[in-house]
Image 1 (spheres, rainbow, N blue to C red):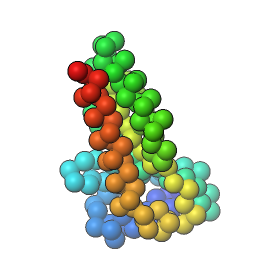
Image 2: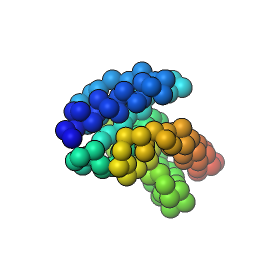
Image 3: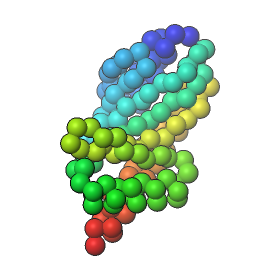
Image 4: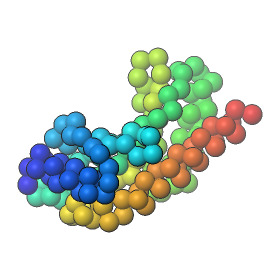
Length: 139
């Protein structure tokens, strides 16, 4: 199955779940949940099977050395203690973007959507823990 067709299937299922989304490319779908922007990234999806990444990007930080040290501490702690999600940073100009994602091996698109609300909760649990660690390291 071509990625474009698979993307359309995921978009249709997303809409069926009550979200409005849009195709950004043949592998990326964006949608909003509770005022936050998320992305679904389809990777290696030959014959409808492959990894699906549910991603959230937020919390931009400055690049100063103190902030970077706090970010690395929080990111390392989160990734060591949370096994299902991963959180990482990407430098964008003068800022650092923080991503949190869940990656799922989905044989069929419905496999992903059967646990969709759980995946969103996992991202927010991880995200809140990251923010808590950042706050603690500030003191």
